[in-house]
Figure 1: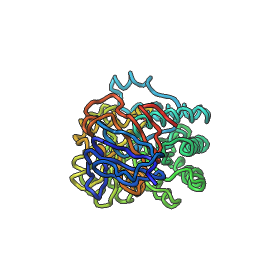
Figure 2: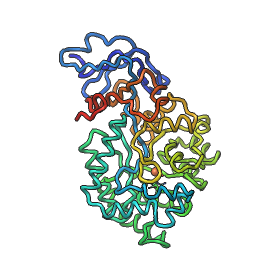
Figure 3: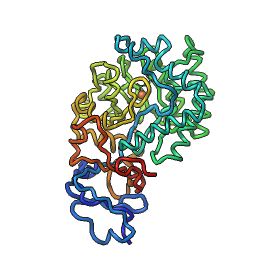
Figure 4: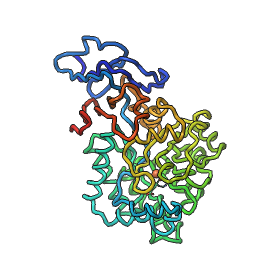
Length: 413
Ligand code: NIG
Ligand code: FE
């Protein structure tokens, strides 16, 4: 019996296989059976892999990578914020806009007033865009409802989309994204509400796998963040932190202390925090699109992190305020020019390293036998060209669980 699908003649296959030192195979093939990778190798596919039922994908002149994993997004929300652009151009700081009741709080108003169908349609259109650009697994946070009903509604929408759409959605509860207007001046009251009312429901109904906190000046302090995360852990949730995004608050140190799965942003992370993350095995999720969009003139120190032994992932941070794009290929270019990462490092950071950030490294993130057959075929002779020729979509095909779900750059499911 042959394989279900075989990719042949691929100019380059970036396996991202850790055991094989993230080998890039020139002129190779990949065979898939029952949604799982059977074989990946250089040369021509052996004859016994192919019978009259086998789908052949000719990847001459093209590059194959694992399906991209976007390990940090704010997928489900209402509305958009282009109206804030003049304020941003005048140089009004992000945290100032939030203090004025704009920013995240403006999206909270839009999200609360949207009905379930609207929220779902918008998130569905984002998932389609992600898939068209090569993303096969996405982490999605709540955090634009803040009240019980809207947070639950957003997490339920994410769950439905996970069941109905080819892209896998890993859900995170992020009630601790901002202090809602009804709790203004009463942060502790809001924390008690989350811990006593929302988090037990979310955990009991398995609406999220992770909990995340915006640890930032004027939002949640490190002590408050620690408390919320520890309470989440008691309920069985895994931990993520928006850490050291704008003001240095030792968020990286906190992530290391709590052995979080990931610390995200990290523009203002200290050297001690980076060392501590390396020791604790916390994955850094860097978000160079957000650095660009916030006009901070500053990026996470990815090279320093890699030198210190931190596993570095890269994600979009897709959200309506600080990085309104679903396109990980655009983020590749920001990562290269902003963080001075090489194209090979960038592909790893969006595949195997991102898989660690969502605790899926055993199932996805690399092209090796036994892993899920999630792969992207790029109209690009090598990995460098995808990053170098920017602002266009290089995707030819996306294969998810062994099925071609994007064909000739168009949805096919
Ligand atoms: O990751 N920093 C906090 N949260 C998002 C932005 C959310 C927003 O502005 O709507 C972020 O950058
Ligand atoms: Fe974020």
